Amino acid sequence: MCMPELPEVKTVAKYLKQNLLDKKVTKIKIIYGKTIDSNSLDINLLIGQALKDIQTKGKYLILDFDKYFLISHLRMEGKYFIKDINDEVIKHEHIIIEFDKLSLRYHDTRKFGRMQLLLKENLSKVKGLNALAPEPFDQEMTKELLFNKLKNKRLPIKSILLDQTIIAGLGNIYVDEVLFASKISPLKLGKDITLKESAKIIGNSAEILKLAIEKGGTTIRSYTSSLGVEGGYQDFLKAHYRVNQKCFNCNEVINKIKVGGRGTYYCPNCQK
Image (tube, rainbow, N blue to C red; front, side, top):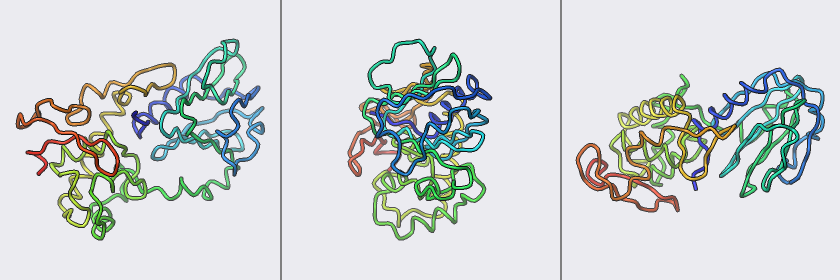
């Protein structure tokens, strides 16, 4: 299955903002309580609070209310849907936040996603969020920064780039695409990545993620954004999910291997 990555998270934020901004929470239904992180404040404190903004950082959604932030990580298969409050509650809808006549429903088949409510002044205390590296678009994500993070790593670059403390926002799909565009083997060790290759990784990450955001993310199997909107970036994939199909650059056949337990697609000719 394909977990939501940075473009998908930004797409979710966009559609939630279009429908819920400035609306006040009127009721909350907690169906599966373990979705709420053990460090969270009582989520019912949101009742009466208005949704002011939705930000993203890496794969996190940050819902900005009057006094609080609600931090949400979708993990493998978390989704949000907006429905009428009178619509039937279906299986795997774990948290329902009502805004007058509309309800925001968190749906998660595998129950891996988590939410945490906190006072705004405590945002810096969220460990997972604040351990994130800069995103590829950020000025502080330079080739020197990435090169220095990689130079002592003896793991394959595919595995390293999935680590959100190295570079934020890349998941399995987009790492494959970035390495293909950079002509770097997914098996190449981090310590062997050059400064020039570090620059390619950052540049291609920013370019690929930007287009994926414009297309609403990638829909493969499990991802749909709010309101059931599907992404369109799957039509632009060059490597991921193209096993046994011809490489667009050299006509060699795209291979699929396992790297760090993750399905990995690459061209053995272009990415030697």
